[in-house]
Every structure is written in C-alpha cells, then in structure tokens.
Length: 92
Image (cartoon, rainbow, N blue to C red; front, side, top):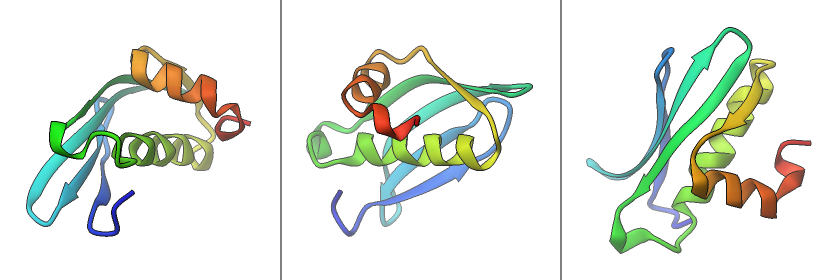
C-alpha cells in the first residue's frame, strides 16, 4: 500500500474501514457486526488507487479487528472473498 494512504475504523454494528489520502476518502469496506460475527459486506476503491494495495489493507484491518475482538468472520463481498481465498493465512 502507498505510504500516504491511511486506514481508519468507523466502529459500529454497521461499521466500516476506510482508506484515505489526507482528507480524501478513497475506499471503504463496510461490515455488519452481530453478536460474535463480523460480516464483510462490500469493498469499494476509487479507480485511481486500484491495484495499489488499498483493498488488501482494508481487509487486513477488518480481519485483525475481528481477531482482537474474538469474532468469527463471514464474507458477503465477492472481492473480499476472493482475496481471502488467495490468502487463507489471514484467517488462520
């Protein structure tokens, strides 16, 4: 990921992880938290930063959050599902 991109967490039952460059929000990973499960809903990344690791950074942040909070991870987002299938060690 570019060093000038930063990931932030907007916590909540329907929360999100966001990636930005300065004051410009460039991507989001939305989720739903219910009881002991974190469901990854959708990932959206601005066209100009696709392929630069922003989506991966969002997924890693969400998985790390789930691990720290002892939550199971479910995935509805097609892109996140494909990414986690290519990187099964993240959930292990």
